[in-house]
Amino acid sequence: MRRCHAVLAASLLLPGGAVAGSFSATVASLVDASGSYGADVDVLFRPNQHVSMSAGAGHTTSSADFADLHGRALRAALDLHNDRLGARVGIRSWSDSSDYQTRTAAAEIYFRAGAFEFGLRGEDQHSDVAFSLTLANTLIERRLAVDGTGIGANITYIGGNWAAIASYTSYDFGRTVDRLQQALSAPQVDSRPRLAALIGSLLTDLSATVDRRYSLTLDRSFIRSGLRFDIGGVEDALDGSQAQSASVSWRYAMTPRWEVELTGGMSDGDNLDGVGFAGVALTLRN
Image 1 (cartoon, helix red, strand yellow):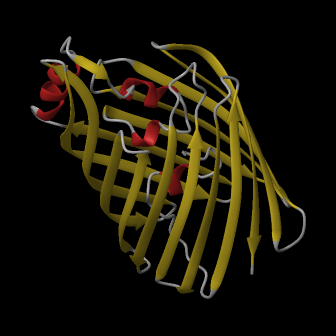
Image 2: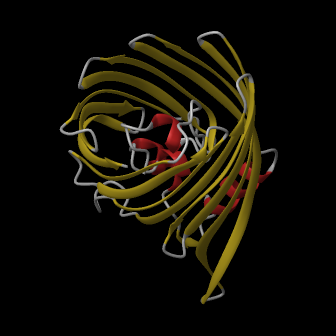
């Protein structure tokens, strides 16, 4: 699930600026108006000022009317940096029972100049799609692999009480997407996963096979609270459909250790009308 309150974490990559010995754990949940819902648990540990590590897991259930997906997600990331240069690596996986499984590995190098951080990112995505077809009155189970690479860049600004993040990634799947489209469009196919539906929800869009992905975040911090505005969009590699989302999040530090965040927003796209969503996250820090 792509949690609205952690855009960078959802893209595998940890923010810089580590504080030695810090630890945090976040429990989050998100629901949308279609009846889909998801829950996540994430932990972040910074053993010193130059190392950050994170890991997380989640579960997603979409409505039967939308796509009837039941997905499980796992993710982990590592960040190594000094005052000017850094490198990040991460991996995430998502599976919907036995019909669709995807694994993405990412690596990024970045450098800082004053209040700005500039990063270049590469991704390797492997997906495994299961479907069935009938030939000569015999049911045959088949699986196809879809492999692709992504290249992206992001710019981060942190100055005073303001922060902003812009990110863009373009993907290339070669002929593997064409082969999958041809296979799933055959009249003999009895069951086919609704892969295009993945981009229709923030709960599943990170697991979709997309041509491009972009996001923009603007954050304003106050003494004990903060506001964040997020917009993002994706274009599906299978049918060219697009989806966009926009959200606003409000966070509040109840104590020095406990923070709560509330999120609300809307998703829209070629294959869906506007769908509202809302989420809540609770974070514990040492």
